[in-house]
Image (cartoon, rainbow, N blue to C red; front, side):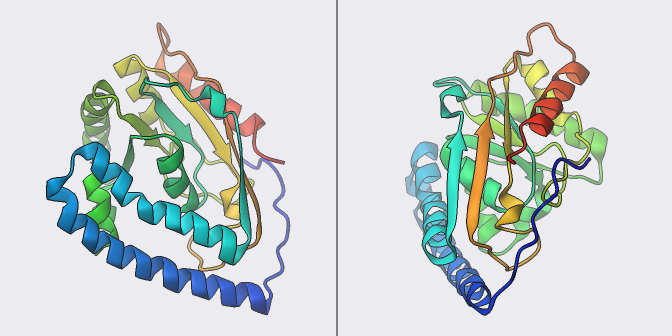
Length: 247
């Protein structure tokens, strides 16, 4: 589903150099910080561990802004419920949103493929944040895990983030939504918080290129799930994301 036509970006020598520097510094910081996180984790509560792990996230955002010239504009902060866990449903374009949403909505647990936890250093640190790891090859088992573990996280006051497209999409494109996020929200009796952004314009998927520009992230009003079916909730979230895609 095409939402808007993405602008053509020119890849200059300076952008290439800054992109390479970001890639090297980002990974070096991540490796070192992941090892430190593993060392101190046994002595921290989950809340302390969450904040400590995300020092790397904050450093990454700082680096992206000052080295690559990527600004971030957020609209709808007032729509984030306070002291109430929700299911966050966001479009998926790059790694950027997996970082930034950790800072914006905290604490949170992300639904992700279990293979990510096997990645040396980064996956090990990610495991400290109580993610909901699923086996995508077994869909029936995956949805049971989402409903069971997701409700445990929500009951503990930890919001759950899901990218219902499943895989990253090109800028200006919205993939087909699966029903996992809506199913969890209805099952747990919590609201859905829709989020949309254009991160792929500055941080393309599966690329080391980082383009200067502005990433706009928009947060919608919570979608009530009381007395509703999964299909209508998922459809409302998808429609909202489609119609509010940053122009």
